[in-house]
Image (cartoon, rainbow, N blue to C red; front, side, top):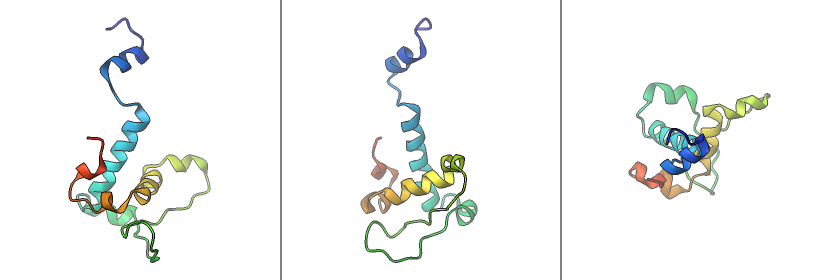
Length: 102
């Protein structure tokens, strides 16, 4: 196994690609934030959306605006975008199993 190149080892171990792992980690972390497991931080990092829109779920967050493209990779930007895109049944779900994938 040590003589194989990284892509072959990666396929043999049946790991998710790093982008999917990061996405999954972002989903889990946002779920925990929104459920109050990080009470001290969530008030400073995320602002609830006040506009009443009939589409999507009621727990949407304000998306921050930025002037530099490198900021779009920050957790607070990509996680809010991800959270707002989730369907209501996932967001309101009683457990992290509602996120799927595990």
